[in-house]
Length: 239
Image (cartoon, rainbow, N blue to C red; front, side, top):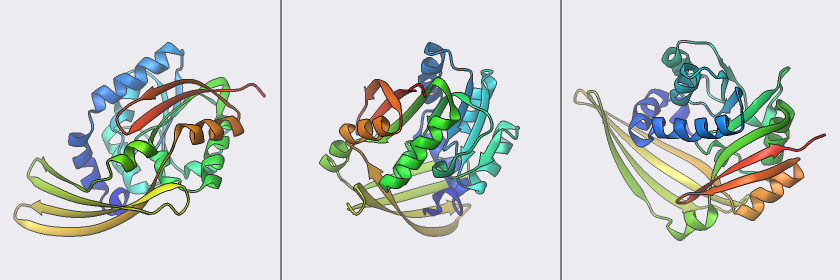
């Protein structure tokens, strides 16, 4: 699994404040949650708490979940609350249920095998109230492979400069998967450090996602298309 969320957790936290527009992303989720009258929510893949801070401030009954303790340590400091738990999304187990579960940041891309997708969706279903809402975004396979290019990013955060050089290679071992090789070059007060990182990500076709949801007891309400991605809003079917 990638170092980005463990060894490089602080680098992630600094970088992604510039890569993502968290205000815009929060407004997106907030509009959906309000539309469907959801108050008690679970965020899977909460990372360093940038969305969590906004959900808590807005009065949601919030719980954040992430696989990496390093990310959660930052989140607890960022949000100044302990409304976070460490867990693998493939092994969810709760004594309470939520009005809505969100898998944010397209985190389901890290679950590359069908078995893991089924386990994740089954766990989410059990964590939801009847007719509870699942909201998650995925990388769209056609869009990813139609424009499958390497890229470079340069970020400045306070006194630190971060360069990420990304190289993509098709994998296709367990689905529409690809390997993401990243080199991080970090300049901090003239001190230079470098890290090499690799992870495998999965993209999906719409038909795949619809079948996964059907098999795990969800009814799709909306599909929202974006560039190289799409977001699913689905409802838990009655038992």
